[in-house]
Length: 237
Length: 237
DNA sequence: GCGGTGATGTTGACGCCGTCCACTTTAATC
DNA sequence: GATTAAAGTGGACGGCGTCAACATCACCGC
Image 1 (cartoon, rainbow over the protein chains, first blue to last red):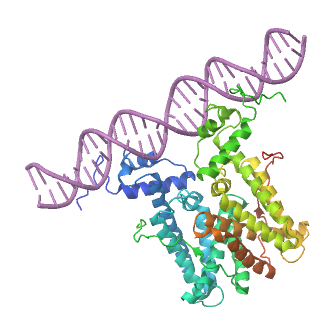
Image 2 (cartoon, chains in turn blue, orange, cyan, purple):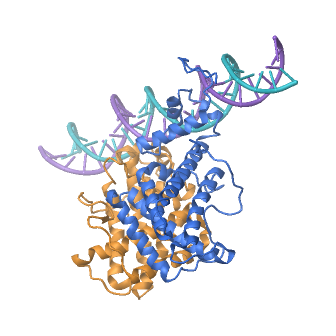
Image 3 (cartoon, chains in turn orange, red, blue, cyan):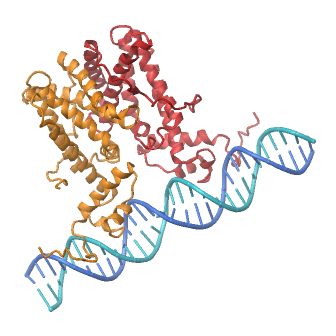
């Protein structure tokens, strides 16, 4: 590589400003724990002019969508990693639940950005990158449940989608709600989050072991159907 | 009253600007369905200068807290009203669940303001007015559950608080999560929200009928303990 | 009934923001 | 080596939240 690791004052072109801006956003988010940061501050952190980001993002919403997508990927990764220590499907699902809640509580601002609706504009729906990331996360749950986390194996056949979706709906909304109540301090203290996840998961499994509630036909879980997705994502490092 | 209903051009003093501003905020919220409105626009709507609101609210956050508190009161009222048509505790709880989800889905921007964390600043916690309103809403759930919504009467004695709180934690986080997933369009379509509420409630009751999961000691549900509350609220009309 | 006083509303200013525009620098291509 | 398009710069615009100084008015003690 010819990249001068010596004292370049600063090259005119940044090299990978897209990544740098998203990274700065993640930094600011976890430092300030406020969703209200400015594009200009990110530019300042990246050492470029306040207008440079516009060569990489159409507008602020576009940037936020990229950050949110990385958030989904991080969360999915934490969930995947958490399952690796466990063998039984039940324990794997519990580990995913703990990882999900922890991920949200450990970075509330990012979690809120992901689910806070800056991106849901009633007009066009969620940005494509974000939709893909959310889809991937849902796939993790589908696998865990079909593998037998509810006490019996449920193959991912078309005849079972309603049942699996019903279980996922309950699981996801339960964990999502718990995470946000913890984040909002309407339930606490946060140090008990693992125990709370376990309690709540236990209650859920009690119910699902009994019967998985039928969900109405035509209901979708995850990003709304019928819109194009995107394959490659931002999280590389 | 000496109030001139004739063509007053405009009196120098507004009369009840506090209420007018909060009302304008509620209007803008339900019209635009965006949480990002400006103080100045509210002032314009109320027909006053851009600085008049500062005589009634310390800053924007203070105004948002007042709006959020009204949101909690409205939601609590819708839940209360919904129970009136029903006799059985189970049906009353189900009606509250439907009303809760409906309330959120019918005005997502307001619901997000209430739970969106503009107000949870990690420093000092939630504003006092808002805390009181949330507390009142929780009381509705306590009553329904103690009245026997889970299949047996659970008196609100000190020995039962852990059990009741456990049930409320599951109920609230479940409905909260479902509402937000609907609002974010990560579950849909919205027209099925009543059926989805019922499905999810059914799954929850299946679980709680079995055993109510123990929640750890020291956990709180609702506004964090140990802080002063406020008695009078904004919702009069 | 009247003057003062504090609550309420206005005007103007400040710095920051997102975004647009015209311009400059640079790397890559024929 | 000239051309071209991508990437970064600098300045401008209107809108925002907030502050400070000033204007208006309702009420209270005399």
